[in-house]
Length: 154
Image 1 (tube, rainbow, N blue to C red):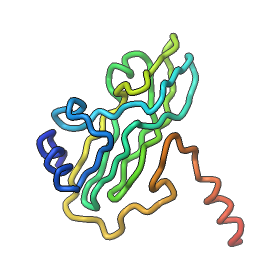
Image 2 (cartoon, rainbow, N blue to C red):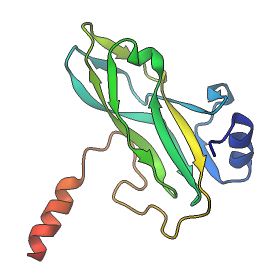
Image 3 (cartoon, rainbow, N blue to C red):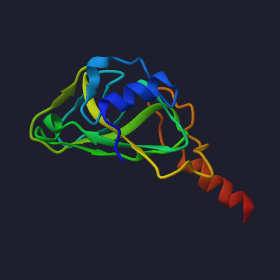
Image 4 (cartoon, rainbow, N blue to C red):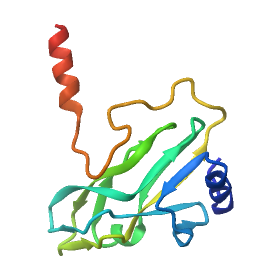
């Protein structure tokens, strides 16, 4: 079940969700609009990573799904968006690609993503504790660390 704006506010009050800094005006009927931590300018065909201004924390029975705001998709912006795992804590980094014909700008503090929070049927057996826990700012891929660990075991 996706959480409504009223339920998100209740879950924040009860400590099951944390969005910091929180702005009530960023609540949508079924989610929360996340803002850009810094200005992002993408030329046509350019890809780059961008971080959310907000730090997000989810309880072990909550899953976050990210969506690019439709105004940006109408301008040619595509995004690679992962789920926000139960138990995640930190800022979120997403990959953006401008396939439009003109440069595209996301202002610092401008809402560009929507977070939909889904309550799972029950809490997970193992909350997220991966390499992106406690992320701050734009975080590059840490996959290479995994590849090095594999080669050390061989």
